[in-house]
Structure formats: C-alpha cells, structure tokens
Image 1 (cartoon, rainbow, N blue to C red):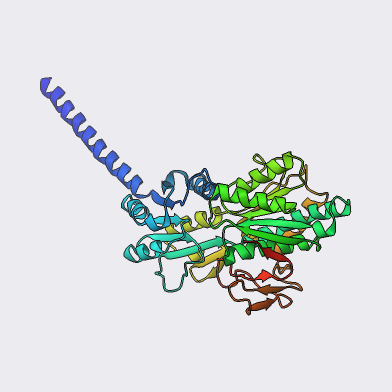
Image 2: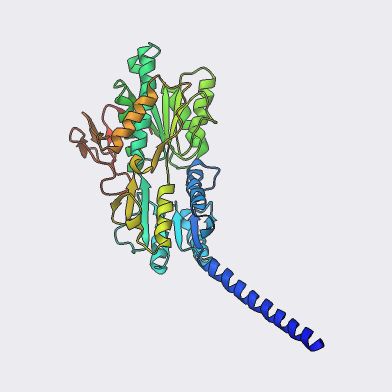
Length: 397
C-alpha cells in the first residue's frame, strides 16, 4: 500500500513538473509572438501635438490587443534621443515610431538593420541615402488647411454680407512656428481656402520661433487681434492661440479661431470655429501589420509613395477636419466643406493655383506664377511650397 502511495506521489510530481515545463514553454512561445512597438515623443500628452500622436498609439492597442506590447519614451529632445531609442531596442522593440526633428534615428537605423525606424517627415531630413529599414511619413495637411480656410471664408462672407465687416477689414491672421516651407505651405493653403469664398481677404503672419512656446504663441495672437484680424489660424503646438482668441471674444471683440492637432471647442467655445489634425493611425496600424507579416512597409500602407517616404490626405483618412462649431459657423458651411473634401478626394481641386505670384522670402528674385499651378507633396511627404503670396500675405516678424 505504501509503495502504491509513493508511486502515485512520484507520478503526480512528474505530471506537475511536465505541466510546469509545458506551461513555461507555452508562455515563452506566446511572449515570442508579441510584437513590441516603440514610440518616441518630443513632448507628452499635455501638448496637442504629442497628444494627437498618442491617439495613434491607442488605436494600435485597440486594433491588435494582446498581439502587441507598447513601449514609449516621452519628453525626448531631438539631440538627446539616442539613449532613449537604444533603451527601446534593448527592451525588444521591433518597430519604432518617432516624432522628433533629428537625424539620429537615421544613424541608429544603420546600426540596427533588423529594426524598422518610422519617423514623421521633417524638412531637415531626407530619405535619400538612408538605409532600407528607415521610413518617413506625413499627412498631406495642406488639404485640411485649405478646407478649414473655406470654413473661415464662409464666416468672413457672412460678416461682410451683413455689413458687420468692411472689405478693407477682411483680415485673417496666422501664428506659425517659423519661416519654413511646412509653415508657409500651410498658411498659403489656408488663405487660398478663405479667398475661394471671400476674395476680399488678406493675411498677416507672425512667427514665434518655436513649435511649442505657450507665452510666445499667446503674445503673437494678441498682436494679430490688436491689428484687427477677425479669424486666426495656427501652426504651432499649444492651445495658446485658442486661449487668446477666447479671451478677446469674451471681452466683446469679433475674433474666431481655427485650431490644429485637436478640437479647441472645450478651450474656446465661443470663438473656436473648427480645427484640423493629421491622423497618424492609418500609417501606424498598417506599418505594424507589415512587420507582423514580414512584409515591406511601403507595400502594405495605402498612401502616395515617394520611395520609402509616404503621404496621404482625405482619401485615406490621413488628415481630418474636426468638429465644426455650428453655433458660430455661417449657414451652409457644412455643405460647403463637405463638397470641398469630396472634390479633393476625387482630385478635382488644385489648391495652389490662381492669379497669384509667390515670392521666395530668402531670395526675392525667385518667384512662382500660380496661374500654372503647383502640386504640393508631389515628390515628398514634407510640404515644399515656400513662396509668400505677393500683395495678399504680409509677414510681420
């Protein structure tokens, strides 16, 4: 009897050991099938720019669930990103999404050819000469700026037609980070959208010298309001322009705001007309799918390809017009902007065209005649139109 009990105990122990080994193997196998995805952010969710990027991370989590593990580093300066990226690679990341303006990822991509480096395209970075595992991407945001300009133009048209605004006072303002083609392309597309509805409009531009400087953005917005700008758009990363517009509107001034990266309705309920954003999720979801299936990213992502540099607009959901404030928008605005988006998707609208002359701010002898038109993002996902429209746009600093 004792021998039988002992034998039973041995068998049970053997079964438990085998189960433990098999369970360990299963867990290890399961862990091996989880793709680790790294994100490197220049800021954190307190700024609209990175908060908008984090939305793509959350879409990834919803899309792939337990099949992926997200690793992230926030508030990373471009010049100091090498160690955070190395940390993510050490922790097992197979694909990295980076929103920094730095060429350090290109250098690291050569060192780690098995890792896919995906970086939001920047004017300082070219895909030329980079390794096969380095990729760039961006939304064709000029499309959304043009359509938001139409919404702004509808509001101007309403003010002009009602006599609340004189033609010479049809001023729109723009707060931009700096004098780069990315910013110039954006405010040009915005003004062309405005003028498609209200040809009386002209624009004043002020630069802050930084992508994220709340105090400077608020100051430049206030200056534009003092000068009589009744609608102000932004190409900077904080909510400061919306705050400044709301403060002015609350004091009785006629001023409206067009936001970037996120809806500004909660921040500026009486002045926020509409906002726009780049939707990073379609690229992230499809790039991860490519890595999961051991495919080339550019063969999977649905976009306009410029080598290993990809871009897309409304047609692929890469840019979006956010909630329209129907309490202040002019009647017919929704129908107007829906029609404009449909035409952009069908390729029926050439945004950068018309009886305009653009002047290169660095070399005034270099001009462009938009009667022949200009195709933005034709060769790169990063905007390239860098001419200031003569007679219609004044850069004040």
